[in-house]
Amino acid sequence: MKKLIFLFFYSLILFSCDDGDIIITSFEFDEADLELCQGSEENEYVFYKINTTINESISFRFINENFSDTIASETPLLITLGQDPNTLIYRSFTSEITNDYYCSNVPNSSISIIEERIGNSGTVEIFTEIIEEDDNDGIPAEDEDLNNNGNLEDDDTDGDGIPNYKDQDDDNDNILTSVELPNNIPDNDEPRDTDNDNIPDYLEEDDDNDGILTRNEDFDKNGNPRDDINPDTGIAYYLDAEATPTEIDIAPALDNTVRTTFRTTISVNKLVFDSGDQNFENDNFSFGHRDVTINKVTKKNE
Image (tube, rainbow, N blue to C red; front, side, top):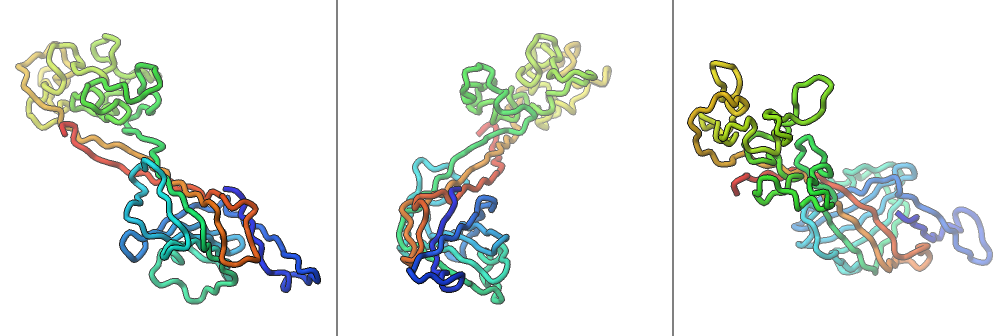
């Protein structure tokens, strides 16, 4: 974030200036995390940064029904300062403050404000985007681009409409990709390929090449072929090509979890504070960004 430079009227306190020159004081929020609190009112939010080194903060409070930090924006959300309740405030304090100062309905009364500057005009731009999506299946998302065309959305091995990098079961066999990766061979990290056909099990619907789809070798119909064991060999039927019992029809049934990271970026344009004795080096600046990661669960057959 660009350095925020305020011009305060500290000349009478810091030193005497006969010609009325204004002191320029610098405030750094580069090392401070951008935080978010839900306000007490409906659709009310407060973004803020706290510099604990010199006990200062900058905050932006607004009410807007269209804001979400877990839904990607098609276009930036624009909010005008000076229109109640949209307020950007810089403050310095007598003592250290914590997140409770903004996130508690009853702030600590022992903390006094030394200086306060309120942004009375300007435009705040809020943009939320997805910066990472992954199924956490043990394969980095960038390595699931089998077509090598740079577009992860094009790779959908099982044709279920969910690209591999967001699909925890890439081959729709009701066995998680993460489970099908290990090959149990010492010092060998190659994915398991039970039938040695050069197609790893996690991308193959028939792992043992016995003509029966892996998910259809789930004879107790509990959605898990791994616990259907051939009593004669002690091997799961879906990995035992010599055992070919009558197949049954089982639909893809695993829940699918996608880990998604959203980034909300805030910038302020043409900011003017309520006091004419201070200003910014640049009145357009970045308030910073905040990342939040959520897991979304869907049914494979939805």
